[in-house]
Each structure stands twice: as structure tokens, then as C-alpha cells.
Image (cartoon, rainbow, N blue to C red; front, top):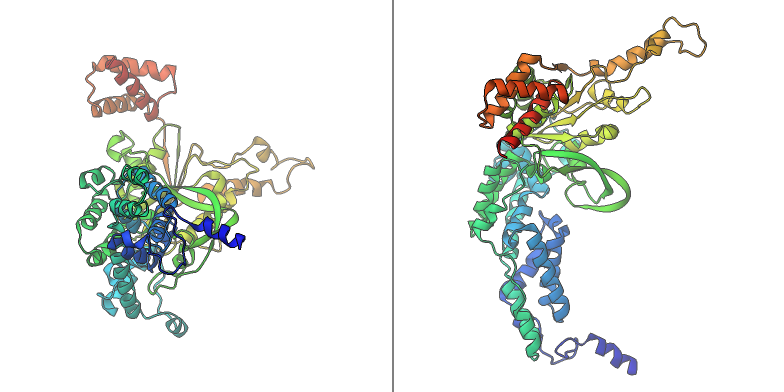
Length: 558
């Protein structure tokens, strides 16, 4: 008996109530705003956007709603969840509605995947013919092969029109639920908490002093629209503004489909530049079978949509660059002919025409890397994304292309400062990817690499000495070794050379940079100081010219 009393005592809340005792009033739900009960249901009833439940803030908000609307709420635990949600909103710099909108736009799910490939045709509003046309266009853009499904695939997958009807219904239902969740106000939570401490004036006063969550002031939200490396800021701002002001999110489903068709889905709709990094491994919890979507894309998409679980080890992941180098082609002076080759090849790529992998090689500081970075800043609105792959992770190329295959976006894999030691085996992965591997590179992926060396693998005089050597320690087939080392650079379809500028070109670059910055300096003084700087520091190059102008601008404003 004593054990039962102790156990019941442990369950008493601040009001001294014990759950399960007949005749006791529900201390929590009686003080809840009606919207909390609806929001609690909405948080658990998501279908298309179900992976949002794994977001830390939404997960805590869901727990908070369940607890405050339960038969047995606890004031202290509710307070902890309330403050944690408020803290996460402050860290995000967004109100709850804007935060949920951000997640809707940039979460990978069956709707965003289908909309990226087919736009509004993925919904029931598109006829079967329109679906097929959009799907064909999407697969053409992404390099997917256009093939008629065989009888087996027809039996195993839902028809496009039936899938579109089901998808539209699920999307609109989820959007209505997410809008109900986004409408939750911190005042409602505090009112419910006040009901819990109705008999304790000190606790009531403490609850009333709890700070409210960030509101959804439109001017504040515009200040936090996105990172510097955001994709199509105008397009993103437009859809955010629409959802912030809309009274019915389900009516915005087609606008969302247009957004995903234009900007992509998941992390690729948020950033224009990425770095490939190793992170803790994740395992698939289930795949996709969406009509009209490239199978390679569906096989890999669960890795980045949240429907996965931790697993020992590491795997690669695309990490969005929030503040990429903002360089534009208009910022670069000289080397117009060299850049024109790169730009023209990239435009062919974006237009769905045949395009080549490119090796940009030449002297240091001549703008090779800046040329590639500028591509993302110029053409991200046309669906171009740049992914930098460190030289040490080149063996991940097969995994990377599987993650990118079938998407409607275009990707340039960027390898900076590429070179190999003669005993470095990483180059075999790059060789196979460029040409010769069993697994082909998809048509929506190109490789651009920069290097200070034309021949990317170091050669030694001893290699060539082996051709005529009689030493038993030298390789018998020395010519084969030389050919092996030369074959990598040959596999790039185009090689663009950036050479160090002569004196005249160097001074023209200095003048051009100074003019773009609005510096008014005597021409003779500018030339004289530029030559001094070149002799004292890194030699003639666009990088040296920029560093000199940086120094000059700082000293002119002293």
C-alpha cells in the first residue's frame, strides 16, 4: 500500500492532481486555445511532408502541443519545451510561420521531387499527355533516357494520372495542416500554462513574464530572406511572400510546383554552391517509386530527404555554402577570350547540347578558379549548381553522380588545384569518370578542374631514362608508365590555358580594377607603384594586380 501511495505521489503535478482518478477535471485541455488541439492533430497527420517531423524545432513544437493539450500536462516540462522552441526561433531569426515556410520550400519529399522534374503536371491538374510531355522534357534536361516503360513496370507502378490525383490531394491536405501548425501563437501556450498554475500566484506571475516567440513581421522576414549564396532570391522571396500573406496554403500548391520546377528541390533549391564532405553515414528507410522520375534519382533521394537512420561510419554529403565568393564576370579584367570558351561550353550544357569537361590550367593567380566560381553566380537562376570536390575525395565520384543523376538541374563538379604525386592512386577515379569507366557520367553533370600543371601527374627524368636503361632496377615498359601519366589530362574534352600577363596586360588589369573601384589616381604613379609591387611580391598576375589595388585603396583612405 505504501508503495502505491509513493508511486501516485510521484505523478502529482503542480495542482496536486493525479491521473486516472475518476471525477478529476482535465487540468490541461480545459485551458487550451482551440487552435492548439487542431495543431496537435496536424503535427501528427502529415503525409507528403512527414520528414519535417525530424526537424529539431518542429519535433519540439509537436511535443509541446501534445503535452500542453494532454490529460496530464506538467508546468515545468511545458515551460522547458516552450523556451526551447523560442530559442530555436531566435537562432533562426524567423517567426514560426516563416520558419515552417522555409522548411516547406527546401525539404526533399515526393512532391518537390516530382515538381522539379514535371512542374505543375505532377498534380492532377495536368492531363496524362501533359504529364508525359513534362516528364519527357525533365528527363531530356537531366540526361535521362526516354524509354517506354515495359509491361512489368506498368504493373508495378501507379499510373501518372492516378498518382497525380493522390499527390495533389495529399499535398493540399498537408499544406492545410502545416498552416494550422504555423498559426500557433506563443500566447496560446502561455494561457494554457497559466491554467496549470491557477492556484499559485507566484508561478502565474513567472509564466506571464515568459518572453513571446518571434513574430512574423513581414519587414523582419525580408531581412532574413536567405543566405548570400541563395538560389534565385527574387523567386524565393516571391513564394515566401505569397505563403506569408495567404489565407489558404492549399491554394498555393501549383505555385509551389512552379517554384520547384524553376529552383529545384531540397538543399539544391536553397544554395547555388556546395562542398562535398564526409559526414556520419545514413541508411535508407524506404525508397521512392514516383512515375516520371528517373530511377537513379529515386534510389538515392532517401539519403537526403530525412527518411533515414544513423549508421556507423561516414558517407559523403552536399554541404551548402552560405557565403560563396560573390565574384561575377564583370568583376574580372582581361582574359576575355579564355573565359569565353568556358562560358560558351557552359551555356551549351545548360541548353541541353553536348558539352565537354574542361581543364583550366596555367600560371598561378590568373583567374582560373574565379572563372568557375563566377559561373554559379551568373547562371544559378538557369538551374546551374557548382559542387566543389576535394582532391582527397575523388574516389567518391561514383557516389556523387548517383546522387545527381536524373535531376532536372545541371551540376558542375569543381576540382580546384588538381595535381597528383606519381604514387597517388586517386587519379584513377577521375580517369574513369572522365572517360573509360563502366558507369557513365550522366548528361546533367560536367567536371571542371583547375591546375597549375598541364600534365597532372608528376614526371621524373628517371622515368624517361628508363626508356634506354640497362639497369635491372628500372621498369621494363617505361614508355607505358609515361603514357599512363599523360593520359589523364588528355581525357578532358577541352583545355583552356591561362598564361601570366605581359607588362602591358598587367598594367591594363591594374587600371581596370582601379577604375571599377572608382579610384582616381595619377596614371604614371599607378603604373610605377604597380611595377614596384610586382617586383616585391608575387610577379605579374591578375591576383597580384588585385592585391596591389587593395593596398592602394587602403592607403588612399588613410
